[in-house]
Length: 331
Image 1 (tube, helix red, strand yellow):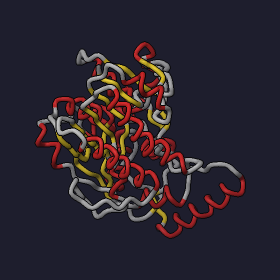
Image 2: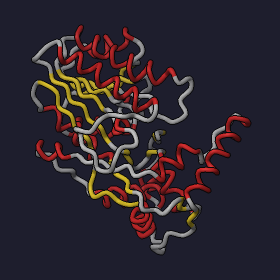
Image 3: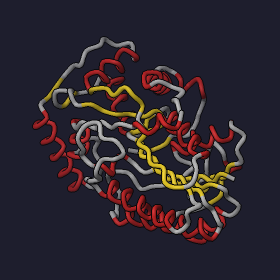
């Protein structure tokens, strides 16, 4: 039995799809019912020890995809309760169920605002609560691993993941371009690493055959693109002229984000712009994943094909052709 904690979410749903297609016996353990695979779902919350205990019984391998990850989580203590204490609860439940294999989806957020193209050997320096608690969760799983040499722990640190039906930052960027409201902040020379959801799920599935010990991987779909290259590519996919359009200096954009933060606090409502989002947009977030090659894994979809599929689904009629399927909210 392959138990996927967080299997009702964006990456989890695609991952379960691939496990089912491969003939694996799958259980989804999530506090939200799976809209796509309701028959495989059982209630489990990483903050609820009793629900985890029953959900993990009979499992051979456990994948933990559950996390608090948005920028605006309140109270902020939820990052620790879900990401760190939740990891502790998963480890205890795994011990009681005699499970010896865990796969944990961490994040490149553990590196913080790192130098370009860092690999898995880089120092960890998270810049927010999400990255900090992911880093701490990794150590929780390493403690579980260290208590029995027969155990296997795989930690996967994906970069920003995108794909159809995800309403995260990549979708917001694509939507701005499709609607003609996109404004380039800064020069556009900053480089972004990205990952298509189908490829991330495929790599998670490939880790099931890894042996005992720790296995640590970044996950990135190459080639990386500068913001200018990304905008040009997206506009071509949309059938629009390959031009950048309006550009504003970073300082003005960041000041606008700060003003939106003040207004948000005063009016008690969220705005699509914030200082954090402007900073993320203009930062180079470029990562290397050299260890993936050693596993023999090859992504099934190129980065360009992933963008084309996403744009077709979201903005060129794909969603209408496929009918009403669930959407996923994430950063």
